[in-house]
Image (tube, rainbow, N blue to C red):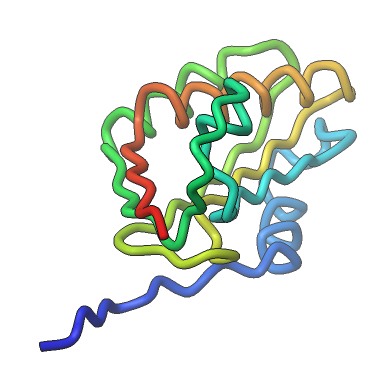
Length: 136
């Protein structure tokens, strides 16, 4: 039996931006930032904590809690100058180079948008998702 999965198609950022610029709040937006997280070969322990056990990642099991993601988005909308947010999360077994997530934030000025992107991606990564690295 094969371990096939139905792959979610990654969104088009061009389409997302076209959609965002048609949003009623678009007149208040002075910049958009996009985060695109992808599966990397280097284990999280090595990148984040400098712990190198010599292993490499070959794939990742990824899942998320939609209610928690929605709560994180709602919390981010409360930040100063944030007027547009869109999030896409993949799921299942993801291979090296595959998209894990896209986050688009639109706001009035750069410091507000940078802070909001950092906040939301951090919250999603620490409170809303499960990432299990499959080592080679």
